[in-house]
Length: 231
Image 1 (cartoon, rainbow, N blue to C red):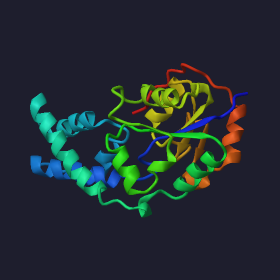
Image 2: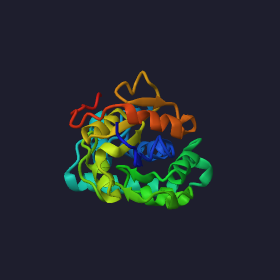
Image 3: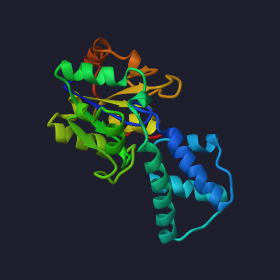
């Protein structure tokens, strides 16, 4: 039996939902390139890094660009995205997110953010919860995308907590895999039919509580499971 000493949260789809802003920015870019990006296409970009997302979008549009041109396109998209998230408010927090993170801290459990987003700091500040995380590990501090566990392992290291005593909260298959690959337990936020490998699945943090968290302590941690993201 392990003792849960830290919770590490993904950002998008767990704490806030910025998918709509990513979609609007990517769609604007696709429009300028002369093709349409659908909401269904956007779903395939969930949990995918900025440059990998751009590669997919260009592939869908049948467009070839040099590396330098890709960098310029990605920077343009990000500028539009940052402009939109700079207008976010606390009202855009997902239900129960702030309350559950606060309950963890009150119980003496350390909290960290583990996100591929390079704009995590801005978002946390705009929605008013940047003070609720002991550590923020984001795309500015990691280079390996999920299902590689780098982002979560760095979070555990910064918290000075061994991975086996950490629980990750994720809404993406690749994120669940990353948690397991790092020897951590994973709570899926979303559908149990999709997040089949999570140790527990809830529809949102408003359905999570400390009792459910403590129940995970009796489940074994299987380090190095080498879960693969399912496309």
